[in-house]
Image (cartoon, rainbow over all chains, first blue to last red; front, side, top):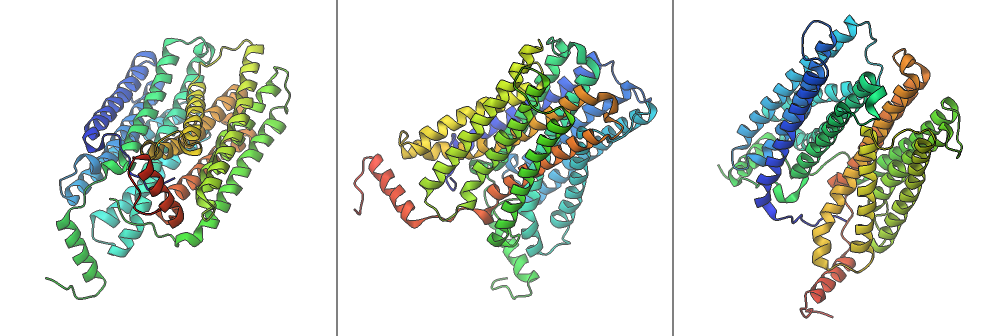
Length: 253
Length: 253
């Protein structure tokens, strides 16, 4: 059931998938903004429900949209050097991290002001697990790949785990958002949700669009058709580095 | 960021991952059974909430545990013929399909009896989308791989899509279950959920165990270390078949 290449039109379809992911990602951020801004009373930073409203917007923007884009850069910037793309990948993830910290502070502030216990729901457990693993993954990524702290052997051991957990964390981010949408709807409009009111339908559509964003990003980064082409110069340097780090004499200068 | 093999102890760790997945899967089914049986009043088939209780149990058993096991068979039965494993894969999916249909009938029956509108929540949208895609995927799988209705070229085009959607549907099943857990808790124990009551904590733990089951199954089927070894005899037959189907004369009998 494995080992055959994908063939959906090959590399020339990549721009369509990338464009699609961006339309979906922007739509998710805009719909979250409209939901909180129009239906839930807008934004503030005073411990009120308006401060809570900052939370969904930051999480969708940081842990879904920017996180997804950080994952995509290796497929989009195919011919730039690995080092440049790594720096962009790390920077986008740093932005995602900062924005999601703002989002977390907003919800903890709101809970404290309203005397609501923290961290009791499945949404909070999944969301916090996702955030903590993302922070660890970001630190390990910096240490292993951006700064030369790890040996080539250690890097090649960690790389597939970094890739696997990277995609897993996008899935967990999207899942946590969907749990948050369900929680928010049942806390706010439980009585009218079953009557297909505008707010309920809009939030459900947001959930489906978040799933679609995750699916498109997941497809682009896992499809064999869209893999980054090997760069002969970098490969040579990498072999050279590996040989030196293993204490052997390189066969050519 | 790609192209290097995983190295977590190689193939000899596979039995541990498979055993872990089974422990997690059985734990999920048992905890769902205990939650509905002990905290939610047991089971019945009379349109009452006891009939609703059949729904979570069937979905976790069918669309998560049996579905996950159906996905795992290609890694577990490594040396059996592809045809035998395909039949087992299709049979496990058929059991998953039948059990999940029972689970769907239970919740629709309950909604009708209690005069609750159908299909208004994000959980129902995601869950139904997952079920419909699963049914289509199962039919296409039968037509493409188990019965000789498709050409080798069509099979090799569809195979990676079947694999991608197969894993996506497991993720969507787990996600739909987590949405269902959140809905059920907020409908049943909204007042006490934030006080870390036994039922709320048990259901949250169920959610995390479902995520862990999905992660372990996902890791086993995507890791390069655990790929099914190519069978020279089957490869030869496949090439032979492909050559014949393309109307060329095979170079050897």
